[in-house]
Image (cartoon, rainbow, N blue to C red; front, side, top):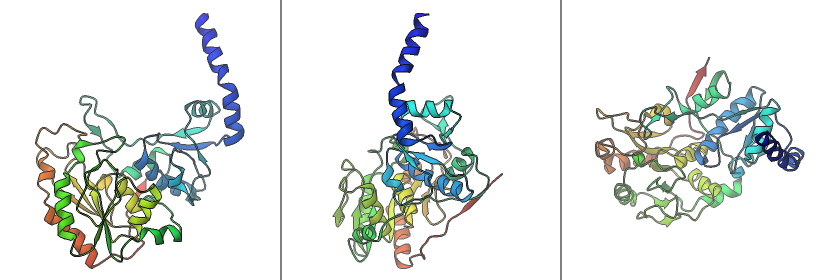
Length: 321
């Protein structure tokens, strides 16, 4: 009995706060929520939001990064992430969907279980969408932001490491020394701008902006760049959201058709152990990454630089039953 009373008292203590939240935020019937750490995944949700809006069934978006959605009319509204509010919405019958597209391997906590299709297609399916969906995220920039993002007449954006991410994957790393060699090979052809965290290893570039940009400033720099060079992760998705082609060093951890984009050049290598879907702890000395040479990455970037594709970039689609 004492447990029942304490639970009731605890729930009652949340009522004033919940009342204020509902008065301020309302009670949407459909909402997307990925989580407070989900920088890249929040951006991927823009693809789901676009497809839901096109079908006349828009979602509200719960996020800690509303700047990713500025100027985007696809979400019915933007909401902060609050666990008690989410629980209350669900108890009122609202659909709060968390479109997690990977899970942990049941016998190896260092491995992911990946979907059998592109992650955006999987997210759309988990959100209950059907029919053809576009496999690309979206971010809208103002003309002023775009102008500020052009630092040089011809620029290439580059990233050295993803280990400073909220959820780092050591198995995605190619090594800063290899990226530095790519930068040296490209230096005669364009100005290089380094994006990322202040903790990322520095590269020989013309503009070192590690830790010096907002998310939207980084997006504007990408939108004004001829190509982005980096690893699979947030900046690759951000580049695609603003129609910037990318050369992505992916190795063999996962197939490019699950994480990549039609307009990107994916640098892959698949030894016998690949795809491993590992997060860290490679027992094969990262063979899939060491097989990719800086010359091939630089060559792919130069090909895009010499013959830039028309924008907006083409995108693949998926048909959901």
